[in-house]
Figure: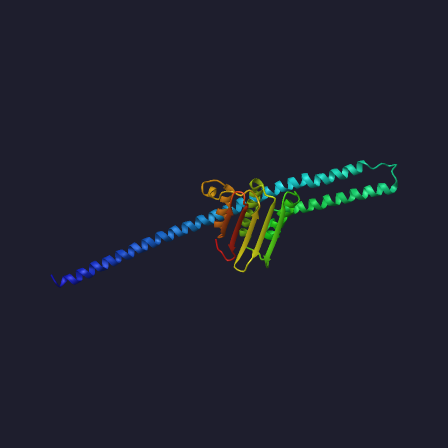
Length: 260
């Protein structure tokens, strides 16, 4: 019987080791399956976000175009019509030529404004212009309102990001600006874009009323929640600093080599 004891112990030990290996393999497979499922879900969320971002940007673009046509092109054409109506055949030739020249300049301005607006209708505006040009175009439209003092500072050498990430990053920028317009009651907006070798830094500050950032975690501030979610989706880091009466600062850092 004693001769069988070592064999029995070795057998038990081998069974324990085999059982441990089986458990380890099962746990590994479970984690691997969970990882693949999470990656699949992340990819699905990413593609959904890209589609939603395109639709939101198109909607925002159409609103901007509508406002631009109403406020600028329509006004220019109205002035041109008024000038034409003031021309009298019995006026001196010099006066008639001057008024015609004024109308011609107004019409040329309206034509140029419409050309600029037509570029914004293209669905691939971000891909064509790039992130920086798209942001500059947004500010150009905002400046025309005269409601804000706007500064835009660019640091480093400009480079392109993957189109999908530029699209989502631009949508985040729009979300922040829309929040400022709707809620901040600000008079100044400062933006810095830093093209660093390892990351792209986007810094946006307003001098508005600010808010309690604790409200983000309690379900308030849907726009800011969207910014946070989109940051995570593209592998970016976000920082939000605000106090009531002290304005708001938002920083977004996107590693240039981050993968989705």
